[in-house]
Image (cartoon, rainbow, N blue to C red):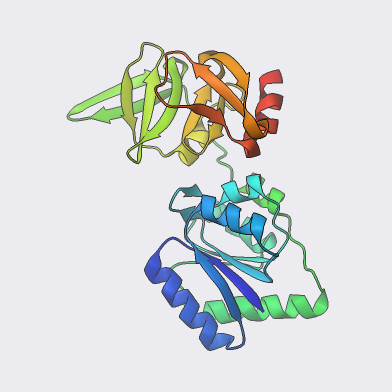
Length: 252
């Protein structure tokens, strides 16, 4: 059995490897990956593993981004802590859902479940699209966002946000007036509170307001290059994986 581990906590990954080797001595661990980018590149370049052990919060974002960029048709055991409302969705749309810190008996049960399903069906299928829908935040989109900087607290209307970007691992909101404010939310969380009709995540480091797009140009590998207002000092490229959805988003 070939198993791929996607986990960004070194200690958790090491423990998981040891438990798998103890419970399934014949298993072949293909690798341990710690980021969305690394996982996407690996999946594109390698045959599908028999089983995937997948943490949700990775070094560069949510592992749900992997599903958006590549098709995954192998069974998954999720190894993470997540909001209680989503647990049933994980149970239905994956092999199993294990809370950290992992317990040997829980992992053993999940692996036994996988082997049983494999005996019953050569390729057990799970609806990861349904899982993505189930774990989306259910609250309405926010109209304001609270900014904390130093001893100051400021409420900014979301409509004032031209775009959000990552700088030195910090999420930054830039207003149409060109002012920058640090944001407590990461980009994954911002996607859940921003109106998708107005905001689009063009790559892993930037979310743009449609009103902030000044000009657009075709770019290599089907990508799109944007010029934003106010001007942004970084190249703003819609990734190839998101380009098709971006063009649909522009149509409204």
